[in-house]
Each structure stands twice: as C-alpha cells, then as structure tokens.
Amino acid sequence: MPANPFNGFTDYGVGIGLRVPHYQHILSRKPTVDWFEIISENFMVDGGRPLHVLDQILEQYRVVQHGVSMYFGSADKTDREHLKRLKALVKRTKTPWLSDHLCWGSVDGTYTHDLIPMPYTFAAARRTAQKIREVRDFLEVPLAVENVSSYVEFHASEMTEWEFLNEVVEKADCGILLDVNNIYVSSMNHRFDPRVYIDAIDPRRVAQIHIAGHSKYERFILDTHDHPVCDPVWKLYARAIARVGPTATLLEWDDRIPSFDEVHAEAQKSTLYLDAKKKEQALA
Image 1 (tube, helix red, strand yellow):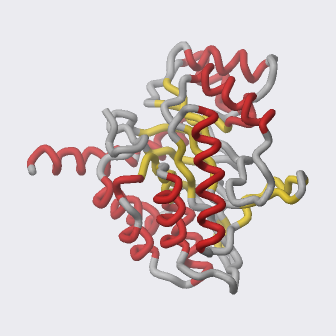
Image 2: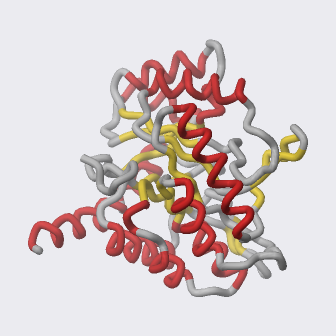
Image 3: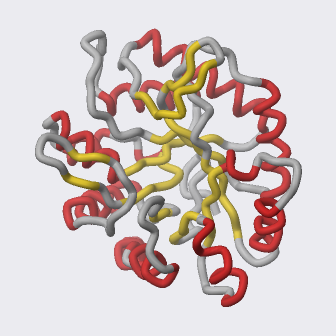
C-alpha cells in the first residue's frame, strides 16, 4: 500500500544493499531480508555472473534499483542508450520505484563518476526537474531523488539545500530518497542544524530513507559507508520516521564490508523505530 501519493510503501520494511562479498551467503543460506537494493549500473549488462546472481535473488526477494550516474543536475542531455538499458533492467527486476542522486557529474559526455553538489538556484531547479520528468516518463516507473553529502558550497546559491530539494521534487512531481546520514555529514561540514533540514522536507514525498556510517576527520566528515550508524544519525532517523511515518529504509555499507550477519543486524535496528511509529499510529 502506498505510504504517500508518490512511491513510498509502508510494507517494505528494512532493506540491505546487495554486495558481491555477500552473494554466496545469501544464495546458500537464504536469510530473511525484506528486500535488497541494487546499484543499477552494476547489472546493466547483457549477461554473465551479475545477471545470473540477480535472477537467483529475484526468485526469492524483492529488489529496488538505485542509480549512481543519472546526474539529473548536469547540463548534458540524458543518454538514450543508457535509458534503454536501464528500462530493460527495470522490467527485469519489476522495481516498484527507482532512485538516483540530486547532483551533477558530467560535462560534454565526460563523466566524473562523482556525485557533485549543485548550486541551489531556481534556474537549476527548473532544468533538473524537467530532466527528472523526462526520465520518469521514459522509464514508466516512479522516481525518487536522493540528497547527497557535500563538502563545498556555491556562492551562487539562492536558497538552502532543503529548500532546493523541495523545489525540485515539487516541480518534477517525484519522490525523495531521504539520506539521513548525508544530512548529518553536510550539517557538520557546513554548520547547520540537521533537525531543521528534516523538519523542512515535505513528508508526503519521502519514498525511501538511507542510513549509513561515515568517517570523521579533523576538519570535515566524509560519507564513506564503512562504519556502523552513529548515535546522532540514529536520532535524526528517529526524527525523520516521526515526521514521515513508516518508510522503506536501507542500510548502506559499501567499504570495509563486514559479514552479512553484521550488516543485517545493523540494518535491523531500524525496525525499532518503524515498529514504534506503527504502534503509535495504531493507537491514534
């Protein structure tokens, strides 16, 4: 059942990123997992092991696609061949929604393979929203855009990051993949209150939530996805769930990946917050 007018689902619970080190464990032991999130680009191939593993996963689990190279904020036109391959994968996985990042990362066909923050201007919001609409219409699946972590800011910005995110999704009529860890990382790097960000987001558009760990250095925090979720991020997650309601949640762990059981246990901590909110709603 949709949790909002866009693409959130109340029954999706907690997911884990499908990663190569865990393939054998998952396929042999068949652990109980609500769903797996895949990086779309890793499976946009004609055959081979990636699709062989994916098809085995699809036989037993729900899968949601997450992209890293759409670059909605880039001035370049969207690569139609990329979209065709992506649409074929969408049909294969039957993903209920598709997500990618609110950023730019390519110039004249050259890709940086980085998620570069955008200047928060009204003109950029309009162009980005138009590209999101075009991609959504081509893929014929609901889209959600993710807020990225940032380490620099643009002097040209005309609004805050959360105002920009709201502006884009309103104009694009799409959902939000709310990355709580990214909010925390950016808030520490740029010295703003992350609670203000959470409270400003339109709760009707939050389709999915990401949580993750990060690395703290002397002068900045880096979004590394190589640690357990820290207490301040859990507190922000609790605030987000209190605001938006039970929402499909994914734990990201992409570097120095521990055992499947450790990742699974960390992800399952989310259920405490989800179940508490469901109980509150039932009693209301």
